[in-house]
Amino acid sequence: MGLDADMIANTRPDLKKTVGWIAYLDGAARSLPGAKPFRVVYQLDDGRLHSTKVHSMLFANCGALPAGIALMPDASLDDGTMDIAVIQPTGPLGWLGIWRKVWWDNSVLRRSRAGRRVLERRGRNSSIRYLRGRTADTAMVSPTSIELDGDELGTAVRMSCRIEQGGLSIVLPKGHDVSNF
Image (cartoon, rainbow, N blue to C red; front, side, top):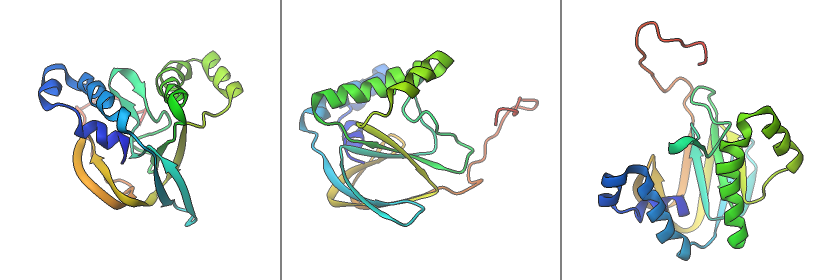
């Protein structure tokens, strides 16, 4: 919901057909100038209500984007847990912090032991927070753009997301190594 959905809505279909996922960069460039934070109230498994301002809130069961970019590095298809990214940049430097966190920290540094040590010492980035749970209920003050798996769905003032354990069936070739699942 939010900026992520606006980016999807502002991506030109002809450009996406021509250059693929790179077309989302054009959609992002068109969405960022008008992006404004909005208030959300959300509740996860613990039942406590939380209120915050965000630019975008993403609910996912996997966290990989094209080009090896790890938006939610701890997300897993088979762990029965939903991963949530709360995007809260403060000013232009906040957007740089998000870019650094998603592209550099998650997609480069996390791949090596030395990089993970750097991340442990640096501490958390306040521009993006990661949450986890099996359920998430979210309400927005006014209608907010939403998307589902890259498809624009219009606007909503409330969303409920749930993980259904065992709800995804994967068909693999006979003899495929499943030891990593």
